Length: 136
Image (cartoon, rainbow, N blue to C red):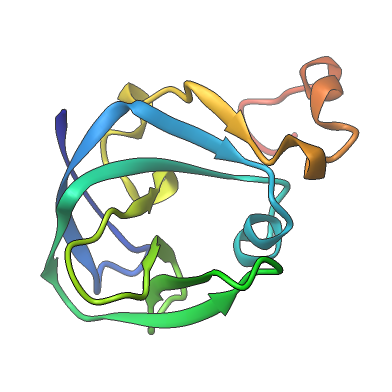
């Protein structure tokens, strides 16, 4: 387990969490693509009830998947930064914390990729694309 801190883009939401550094995943599901506005989303899994919001109040949107499962999507109501996903049932929860909001994200490399059937076909070729350290 690893202790982390993080927050949203505007700073209104801040949190601390205890996460499993072996459970960092890239998710290629179509929900993550749409909700992140990107090709995939990277998450780190918390321990049971391992997320504490230390500043602000997270808004939640409940997404019903094709399977019928519901997931609460936690985000900042001001800047829109996605913070986590979790179950909607009462009781202890595990959180899929969005890695882009984690202060220590460089110390949490992905260990697996999931929902690869939705992976965009061009992802494997990204390494061959020209790369710049800033806007050219």
